[in-house]
Image 1 (cartoon, helix red, strand yellow):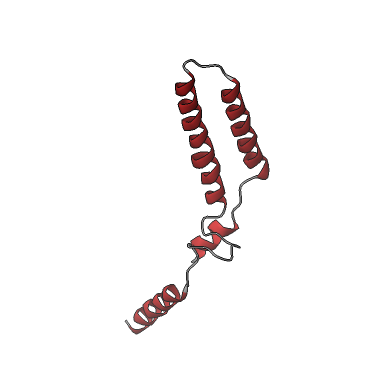
Image 2 (cartoon, helix red, strand yellow):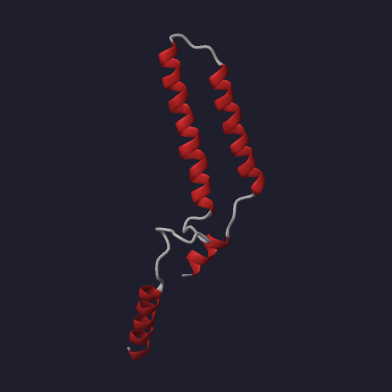
Amino acid sequence: MHHIEAIRETTFVPSVCWMAYIGADLQTGGLVRTEIEPFGESLFFIGVISFLLIKLLLLLIAYLDSPFAAGQARSVEEGSLLPLALAVDRIKRVVEAG
């Protein structure tokens, strides 16, 4: 439980996030303005590289910044901590008894 709280309280430096977004925008913009022949292959490579930048890099940073979707009303990651608390209570009782 302490580890979960530490992860929730840790945030990325905002300037690093902005640098990642600006870098992805500049690289995607540069790829779009580059002339590669044939046109179909250029679209494919621009699409793949843009997907990797946007989906993997930027969304990974967003996920790492809030791994348990803290603050979002409807989140799949949010779950009850009651089973964990009950398990901790059972372990405490066993340790105290034995």
